[in-house]
Image (cartoon, rainbow, N blue to C red):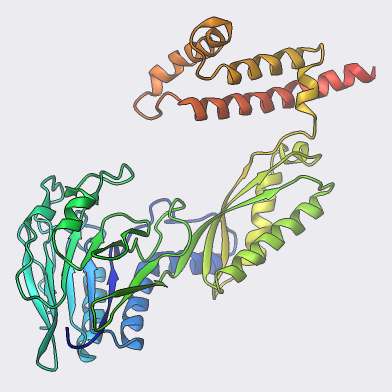
Length: 441
């Protein structure tokens, strides 16, 4: 290899993703509502524009896109035209682009008849092809890739990649599931050891939406994640990798945040708070920190109120959580510019009581809490009275589970313990006031 070079690796753009559930939002001010919805509608395109700007600003030698450029196989015309415009900008700057299509934008779908710059290469469906990257008459790298001919690809596409001899830097582009990641459909399944042995210097992967560095060097095996989170589970910074290759072939990675709107979950404890005013101030502080931490980028957040305190009972009254939600939306979102939008509010709070002291009391609550502890501590117990208690509670859940088994699996040990904890808090809400009054009578 005569000279070093650089490129950007991105994947899973999902252009024109519909953001299901966010077609409309409940907010009185129409201008603010439209500002939030517009940024959500456009954020996948914002991420694409940011990738193009990063390529131009850093003067990279090429761009690699590892599948699911579009959200649907029947690609929207809006998405295709925005992508075409982005490719033309890179072509004008002399930056070639290598594109693989994945399970979302596979070849068996509808597309418009558009003209693409010669510098944009789309890998063929169902077979691996190779293209050289030439700079000043010398090949600096060779890019191998494959696209999906259909959505359900269960063949091991990694086995089709064969590095040719005398290639200065061999890069493989593959939309796949390495190691059977259970969070994603098992398309084009393969193993990490197989990729390591294949002889490529860099595997530019797509399909897994979280950022993962499976192997740091020799070869470098990378999932950049999606450049724009698409739902409340895809939290945190999203983007792509800037990859620098030195004259000796060593690779240096730098993550670049590209997202236009970021998703977050915010937990605010009520412990130690005596008034609703104090709670509003604490939430305000947390959201202000959130805005600062994300450099003024728009954020959609789920708020969860946690902890134990005197405000727990206030939060149970109808309209109180909704009032908090509306107030914070007014404070942190407006008709233009970035926003922190509270998507929802959840109250996971409890009474400020000493549950352990109650367990030892000779009261109905004490008996109930003692039974709950007995069931939790019997986890993993084989036989015996404790184990029977946990089994009995599971049997009580069985009829309910039978009705909804298609949607909710029977809870495992950790989930079962969480249900027991939630049941304890519900019992406290229902019975504590009665016992408290009786004790003071």
